[in-house]
Picture 1 (spheres, rainbow, N blue to C red):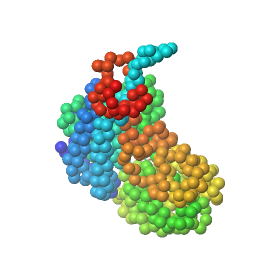
Picture 2 (picture 1 turned 120 degrees about the horizontal axis):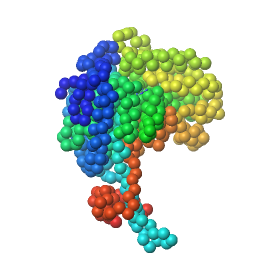
Picture 3 (picture 1 turned 180 degrees about the horizontal axis):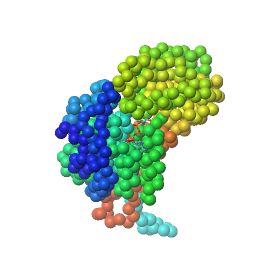
Picture 4 (picture 1 turned 90 degrees about the vertical axis):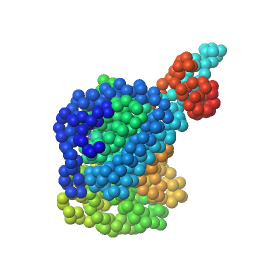
Amino acid sequence: MPLTGKQLIAGKWLDGRADTFRGVDPAKGENLEPEFTCADEFQVTEAVNAASECFTEFANTSPQKRAEFLNTCADEIMALGDELLERVSAETGYPRARAEGERGRTCGQLRMFADWIVKGEYLDARIDTALPDRQPMPRPDLRSFNQALGPVGVFGASNFPLAFSVAGGDTAAAFAAGCPVIVKAHNSHPGTSELVAQALAKAVEKCELPGGVFSLILGSGKRVGAELVKSPGIKAVGFTGSFSGGTALFKLANERPEPIPVFAEMGSINPVVLLPEALKNSAESVAEGFVGSLNMGTGQFCVNPGLVLGVEGEDLDRFISATSDALAKVGAGVMLNKATQQGYQSGGAKLRDQQGVEEVATGEATGDESGFTCQASLLTVSGKDFLANGELQEEVFGPTSLVVKCRDRDELLQATAALQGQLTGTLQCTEAELGSYGDLVELLRQRVGRIVVNGYPTGVEVCHSMMHGGPFPAATDARFTSVGTKAIERFLRPICFQNYPESLLPEALKNDNPLGIARLVNGEKTSDAV
Ligand code: NAP
């Protein structure tokens, strides 16, 4: 189906009744066809009502049925073929290989959730059988498991047009949990969003699910996005994007008569701590890997390494010099959109203006002024100035990094202690240093969601043990991840059945264990019948 510029509301493609806009090719700065129409408040309500109406039916589908649906979503996305890859590149400036890689990741995560839910582990089924003769009080029969939370509103990020967007991790996790989803498309890739929505609509139809299971609405975050979050039928929000966007939606959700959770993954500067022995042994190779990580995707990753901490001296100078040499050869990159380019320029200018900050290297000049291009940049500052100025921790979204030259080990510890919550913290170190710097490692552990040893923060594996989140301001709730199968936990809630008739219990809690899943029965993990 060619792009229509319409909304998908409960299985129907409808013209939006509000304003219009177009996608833009960031490499050329040119508008793309077609024109997209935006939803008005009644259309947002229509989508939410349809999701609410079908919630019970979808929530009570078997894990096998939802696994079939998730796999069909992946099949249909693949069936979009080149048209999808071309549109991703046109709307983001990403090369085809990146678009293809991200499509693989998106379909992989849908399929991973499909495989995961049929195992039943996510249900966390628990049974405590009745003890009628217990003294001084009998114990009733108590059984609990996780059930779907309710319709979920999803906001994707501009920099992951597939993997953190319409059918990205939040949507996959919500579907896996049994929650209908309404996506507020990112204005930076409306065509990509519509194509993926077409695929999901086909999957809904093929799996004979109600149309309300999935809707796509377009429009600005401040209007359509806010309407969505305020809608009483929405019971949780998944968000990936900026600190300002995430916190605005978090605030709105908490001001509702019925507050709801907003799981927002926001910006991060992902500190890389260079410990002395590792730096002495391999300053140049660490620099080489660092420059690769800093420039990956033109630095437009939430796990981009925007901060380096080290102790001043010859070895840190070797690292800075090798990084500067490599950075000077980095060509100008295309940024996702004009706002991102402007944010990069103004954020970089603000950082350069701060007390003690010095720019030591820049990438190649952009030359071509027609697209939204940018230059990489490396800056330095003393540990003292870093500690005195919290603004040096503001994310500059793009290929800019600040090296903090600490006076000694103590100042390195202080700088680590001053860090705000982060998605990741990286240590370049020897194994012995991991032990001898135990105090620093402990400080880092308290501030990040993932610790990387002798690697770089970019490259977030989608797997069962991934933690992509972290203490505020990296995320609004440090207990949850937005990547990997544990991400499903955001969209589930426990329910307990006390003295419930056995024959009417959900399958997961019936005595004979028809799902064949592992359960906690009277405190022991078992797949046996009760
Ligand atoms: P963004 O500007 O926050 O936009 C994300 C979505 O939220 C858009 O649909 C946007 O709609 C909406 N939105 C933004 N502000 C809003 C508000 N005040 N009220 C309601 N809705 C609002 O994020 P982005 O464009 O993707 O920018 C990149 C940023 O995301 C970077 O800071 C980066 O570090 C971060 N990021 C984080 C992760 C992560 O996993 N933590 C991943 C990728 C990116 P409009 O476009 O209409 O405003």
